Image (cartoon, rainbow, N blue to C red; front, side, top):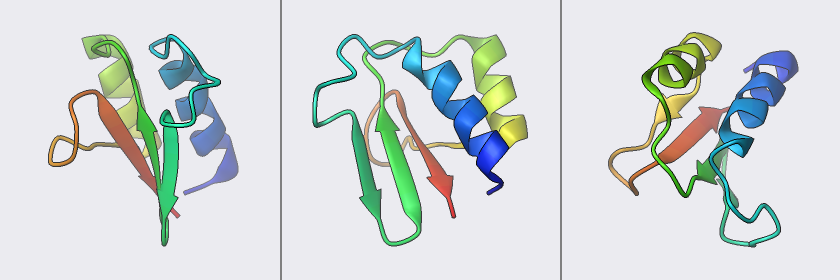
Length: 69
């Protein structure tokens, strides 16, 4: 994923995180970066995240998104 797309996705997801200082908001594993949001992402933001290359991580946790390297 290109850095600008990654950063734009983080800016969108940040709106849905109540406490960005919480250590459980972000995680990384191998070539995947996970973001765990506190609220449901709007349909418009979901479409934008999809276009940027972010993936809805429905298998792991509700309101969780991931970016691949």
